[in-house]
Every structure is written in C-alpha cells, then in structure tokens.
Image (cartoon, rainbow, N blue to C red; front, top):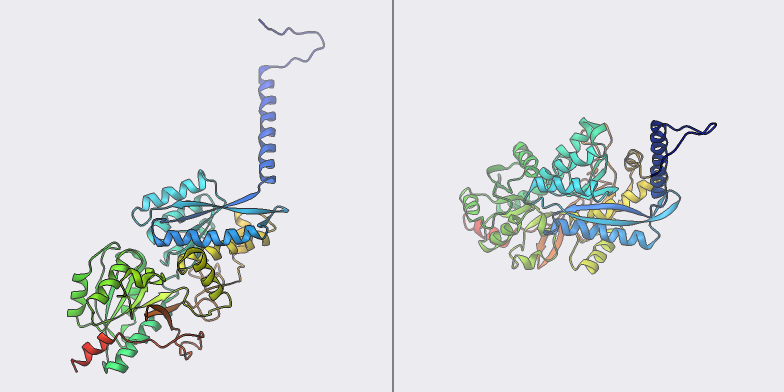
Length: 449
C-alpha cells in the first residue's frame, strides 16, 4: 500500500492541480507531435475520384498518374523548405450508378484517407454533392469532367463557401455555346450546300442527365438564327443498349442532322446503331467515348463519318498537344480523353502550392490558383474571375482553350473544327480538314429531289 504524507516545507499538490498539469503536458506533447508531423511531411496526397470501371475514371487516374510520376522524377513539389513527392489515392466514386455512393466516397477520401487535394469527378449530379463535401472541409477540388453551369455559378453566388472548387476539362455548357452552335452550323451549312435544303431539320438526342439540358435549350433558342427547324427531342437512359425506337422516330420526323449528347454506355449504342441502320441524318455532337482511339473497333466501324466534340484532336493546338497525345498513348495504349486532364490539374496544383511559398493552406493555394496561366496540351488555361457569373471556370475563347470537333474518317479521327480556313474567328490548326457529309445521307436525300 502506497500513500503520501505531507511534510513541513514540502509542496502540496491538490488533485485538481495535478489534472491541470497533466493536461498541459499532454497538450504540449500533442502540439509538438503535430508540428513534427507537418515538419516531416514528405508527401502531398492527392485524391483521384471517378467511376473507375469506366473510361472516365480510368482516364482520370491515367492523367494524374502521368503527372505525378513526372513531377516526382524531377524532385517533387517544393513544400515548407524541401521537396515532397506526390502520393495519389484512387477512389472509385461509382457515380455512374449511384449519387449517394459518390458523395460517401468523397467524404471518406477527405476524412479517412486525409488527402490534401482532390481531382476528378464526372457526372454533374454527383459532382454537385462532392462539391458540397469538399467545401464543408475546405478542400480544394479541381473537377475534370462535368459540364453543368450550376457548378461554377455556385462559386460566384457563395464565394466563401465554394471558392475551393475549380473546373478543368469539360466545358461549362453555357460558356461553350458559341462552339456548339458553330459546329452544328458547319453541318447544316453542308446540308444546304450539298443537298439544296434551305432549312435543315435537326433532331436532338441526348442521355437523360442534367448536363445535356443547357445545350439542347441553347440550340432550340437559336434555331431561327441558325436557319434550322428542331423536329424533336429524344432522351434515352444513359445506359440504354437499344435506340431503335429513337432512330425510327428521328427518321420519320425527316431530320437531316442529329445533334447527339452522351457520355455513358448509350453513346456507343448510338454510334453503332446509327451506322448499322444507315440513318439518313448526319450525326454531330458530344459523344464522349468517341474520343477513344479504339472507338472505331468498338463500334465495328459504324462510327465512320460521325463528328464529335474532342479535347485532343490530332493537331497542334499548342506545342504540347502532340507530344502529350503520343506519350499518353505509349503509356496507356489509348488516346487521351477530356478526363485525362487530371494531368494538368496536378501540374496546376504544384505551381500554385509553390507560388504560395510551399504552403498547403487551402485559402492561400486558392489565391494562387486564381492566378493560373498555364499552357497545356489543350490550350492556354486561365480561370474566370471572381466577379464572373461562372467563377473558377476554364476560359473558352480564342487565345485560350477553344476545344474542337473531330470526324471519324477511314478508321481515324480527323479534326474538322475549327475549320481549316480560319472561318471561326481566325482560329485554325495545321492538319485540320473540311467536314464531309456521310455518303448514304447524301444519297438518301438526293433520291428525294
């Protein structure tokens, strides 16, 4: 049995005094440990989130992995006086099938995996939820792959909450309106010129997801200006494997052109059946899987003559375009898609961290991200200003990022927009060719003259 007895002149500690003392010592130890942990930080953790069972998520990972390997091979990122490597954390969002899953994965990525930054995100409905999670934890989230305007409009409307969100890759569908209208006009002008149809009929076919809505509304609003008639709108499921009913309706409506928008499995269904059925309407639009260099094989060649929005056409949009495409193909055995721009996101983060003095404080890094001026494979990347309606969006205009449209011809992707003569605001890229109407479309309508 142990006990203490008070001696004259000795210190007399009360239980409360001991508790305070122990608490202070513990707090000091924890503070010292935390400071040591930060001082000894040797890696910056970047979460890569996307649907990893699909091209979108796989390309998110491929792009980020390429950038991380290049950066680490050259010394890493300057952080707190020393060079730190980048560690990537892969997170399968399952966002193609479940929005709640995607939100939960984002939460775990930040809380359990303790990442410093997040890149990726694809389906707009899911990214809205991911955006809320990232904002709650004040984690910078560079979205690469969602097009709905609401994502960056939120940043403008509640900057203090959403300032941690930036968008690369997929264009804000409203900021890109001039591009979609110009590309559609390229095809309807060909119909008028080659078939003598003064007012071409256009059908709209897009997967039933929210990111499609702005562009379809845009086309309908500008139909008179374009000199076209919109004959109907068809909205199948993003996973549909049969569009026979939709194509029958479009043919019966007398459309000469289809503007299609799809990113899910229905995109491949569209191309395959459009070619097999020889639908007498030229196809152009945003067929995301059509960016895949293997898409001709995947559709058994039925994508031939389809035109589609593209991030990486085989032309030198900048001096970095063709080298990036070549290296990506060599490493991954496929051409890069829009989702691979996680590559640029990682580099942009590195530069912002270093401009912030090698600091990971989110607010300081946000300030530096807003100063981004980065020449990428897709063009010169700068973000829209804080007072812009769509804050922290990628600038879409000549001199910055213009994007492009390719057409599948002779088993290969050929850049057809901006047109080779500089007809669109003087922008032209070496190697671009003029768009060609599918021969069966020409034959079908010539027979009806």
